[in-house]
Image 1 (cartoon, rainbow, N blue to C red):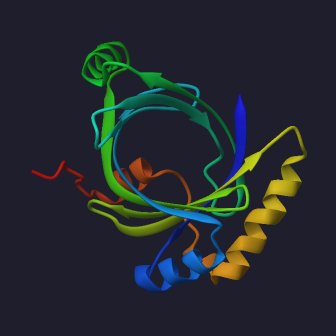
Image 2: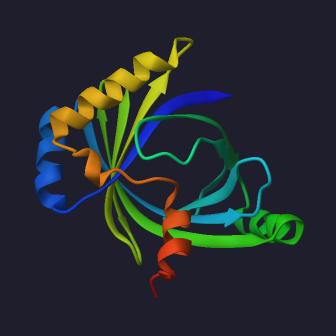
Length: 177
């Protein structure tokens, strides 16, 4: 499985953070519309991601629900017919919920920096340090260094996934009409 080190943080001032990220980034920004459909899954998380252009991918991942940098193992696979895949997975596993977000992606060295506006939740930032065949600690150190460079305080760190926050906060993320 592919691996990365991830952090997620709530963002109080999205424009100020975007300015700091743009100064550090090597590449980007790219704007990506995402609709994540989560299904019940006993040994991790399973989501079907639909992009604004109609393409899709199936993503399975496992990571601890912790607020700081954490290791994540994941597999991604392109999906030719997202509607058919959604029906199949919903019949097999049951629908857990949906997350609608607009993501601005930057790259800083080997780290993906996501500035996300999540429907029903607000603004967040994710760092994903892509790992090769190396100790997890290397990516952990890089994530912490980027947090410092971007001025992300530990108090802004968030546990879990957006779907967990939606469930916990009782927010409703519905597709825009």
